[in-house]
Image (cartoon, rainbow, N blue to C red; front, side, top):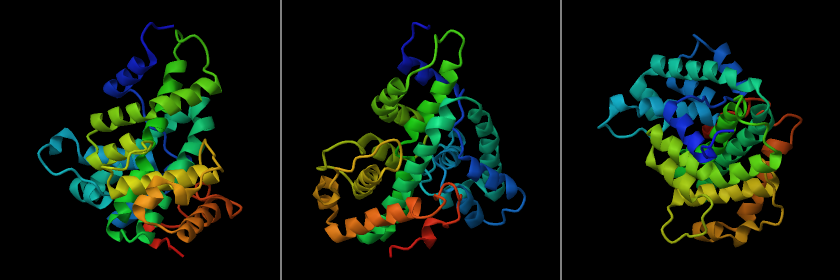
Length: 297
């Protein structure tokens, strides 16, 4: 086994750009099926906005060193406009091809599905809460921040898959160790990834603060994502579940001034979207439409 620490090995993977973030298979198939037939930025946005890796990759391309000195793009519309539709589609299609190689191991098929589910749940939740709390102008930003807040966990699983496959690693990792790694390292590694890829600062703030308890200097978007994240944990979207959470008593709910009735409706919305049908949102791909088509009712 290498004498280097796990954190050092993970930093090396980011710096060497030697790991690809996995793409949710249903979305990758949808992108492949639409190859050559994406006719507008809205078409492309609808294809990718439920996958954190595709969104992350598009922002990376739109904020690359070539565009240094320009304002960072912080919306999918801005990213697609800067790159152009053709180049944006090429970036997305290449990311899907690169992501195909991630699915052959053991860790990603086991851990990525609940991480994808949680990411989409938190994105939808952040968007829903923004609209319900009267912050409609922040809804799209909150959606993307929610989608990317745990990108560090997706990166960690992809990186661990690469590390444990090395002949000199010394054997598989237990589920207990993997869960501990995800919990203790996802913020640090997520921030390192986003800084290396030059992603917008608002996403850094959300990653850095979504587990903090201090609300003194917190902005609205971070508060929305934190509350959405707690709601996802309560209903069991992802790797964790905590039915003891009482959302109206959280600092985020009080900071945002949202009512107990609205928060009960928020929980019901999540359960209906993800557990209320025979197939979950991720199993059906984009069948539920883009955030712009979702209702608060």
